[in-house]
Length: 400
Image (cartoon, rainbow, N blue to C red; front, side, top):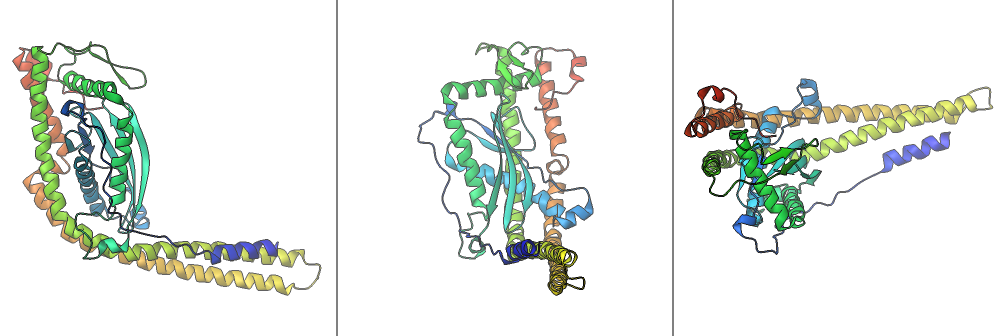
């Protein structure tokens, strides 16, 4: 038993891992196909889920600054949008406050972990038919070199995440074929039409038990109701483009502060995680040594004390004390990280408040204003076709 405990102890305390980090400057892949404008899918990148725990102690344990994380939930979709748009593989790419029937393809994200050293994001890409292209967890590690002054400012610290996402989306789209793209675009248009006039367009699109949408038929190109729907859709695009300009301005203003936070937390985040790992290994190793020592005492044929067993117990206790000391160090470093986050928050919040005062809809009420816009557009649509005002009471169904 002592042999097993000693072997485990050596394994736990002797492991040293090294991570090779490089600055990824390679651009995303571009399609080799030449596609017409009609063959390009419009993409909406929804604001990410910041994934901030409600429990304050959990926020402390995970080193989450809510204000920083909320800012990231707006910033990351904008970077992803720019990456996708730069490839020329897509139609219009826009940041949207939530899923929208006005786009052919929606990218949704949830931030799992984020600091200057590591980014983990869950991504789901779904087209207008309800078909999920893929759901994937992306993990990206930053290099210290990306934070140097000589590093290109156009390269995000986690460039590889955005590049990999763009490449994965292109790989899936390349397997669709022209017919598959047509179906997605036509379905998106019919879903948008149904959200304004469900009865008029109910026969064109059905949703099955799995939540997938299936085209039944299409209205004539010269159908006046379809023409009106397309006009209203363009108005919604204009509104989303206005929001997109805001996100661009927001990202531009927050980036210097955000990069300062990432740069400041980079080294400390690595040290903090190393301290956590060392602490955990030493405590586990100490417990095993104690268990091995006690087992040696009780299994000894000597009626007195087995000296080697006592030595193992003593060594294990020493390791546990060292592990607890490491834990204290990591806790102190966590406090330092929180202080850095708090300092950044002090700079970031006024920017957010100023933007809120300028366009209140773009924070807590973005979705409300977006819903209100759709109510107004729906009212205009129905009034044009002489629908009774009583039918305007129910708001349009939200995007599924």
